[in-house]
Length: 157
Image (cartoon, rainbow, N blue to C red):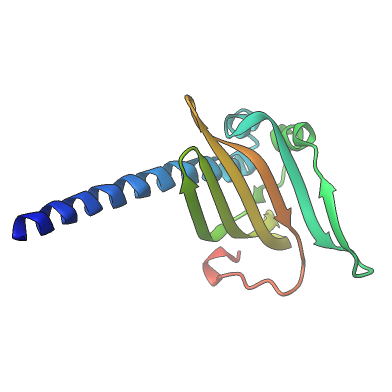
């Protein structure tokens, strides 16, 4: 009986470590996106996504109407790669990663700053697919608001 317990413990430990390694690989891709934004590196950004990802923004407009706006990834990639004097910084926290086979979902809280100036906050929700060349983002939707932002002190300028 003791031997069975040891084997089960070892298997659970191994499976837990494998799952954590996979989550780390997924978060590496997510963190590349924000590094690309900080460093104006559109090549790094492109490496994180499939060729034609779907992007959306969900928000409530000034009249209180719920909106979902489709994004243009090429435009976003070009904006990231443009030389600019300001730094786009988007710290993230409360990462939630779920994986089933070759599909992953990541939900993170964020705050967006241009240099040290707060712009907005919200949630980024990513869907990724695992391919031969690793995890790639195929869907991204974010929310945006300027109020009710509970940003941890370590992410404030």
